Length: 117
Picture 1 (tube, rainbow, N blue to C red):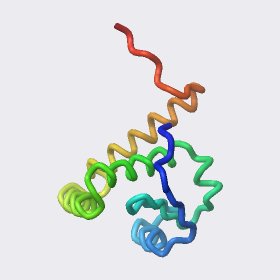
Picture 2 (tube, rainbow, N blue to C red):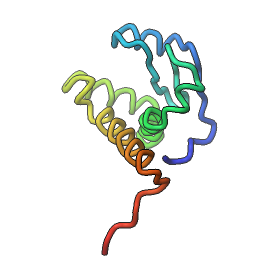
Picture 3 (cartoon, one colour):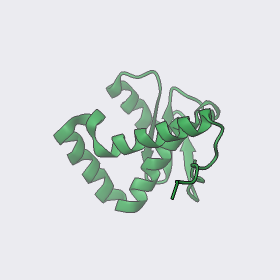
């Protein structure tokens, strides 16, 4: 997993995450706004133990950094309106980051194996 972003914050019992949790009808939610991960229905400790979930949210932190705060929010909204939440390319990328981390963790790898030449 990539090292956490500098100045990364985690907010437990976030109103933003609680609203997302209600909208998604989920028992727990983590969501990112800039360099802040907002949690609802899960403690910071439990979230941090779930490395695939952390990798997913860190991917969103990177997306905010790459595109800029307002531009990313706009791109994410437009993408969601066109293809829905699940097929949103930003969510697909973040899910893949989580899957990759899960695979690495299951195989006790900390970095991807070198590619064959």
